[in-house]
Length: 113
Image 1 (cartoon, rainbow, N blue to C red):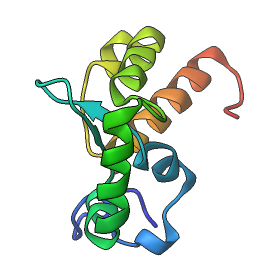
Image 2 (cartoon, rainbow, N blue to C red):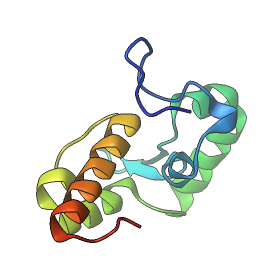
Image 3 (cartoon, rainbow, N blue to C red):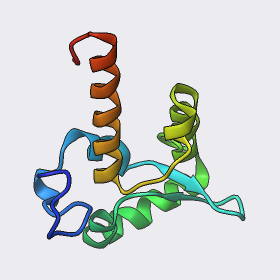
Image 4 (tube, one colour):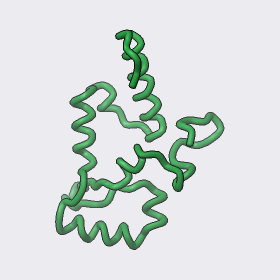
């Protein structure tokens, strides 16, 4: 699964072959303006697993299970405020992160990894 192809849309085009990064961010929850917790999964998961999503939302209504999406954003802003404050589609965010790490490694004279 390539990060960005000029002639294709951004996002998950091969759900069954998705990488670890998508697995990490696929299942978390958000809290809406009414204080209700809802599963924050990607569109392919929401469409393919509607019953499981409904069950997860019922469980989340009772208990805050799993990671909260806003906690991820707080951690990213702590590491790098500029990049952590920007929102991008996952493929573009991965590309930006890789470019930042490689640029930093190049100027510090260290090998990335």
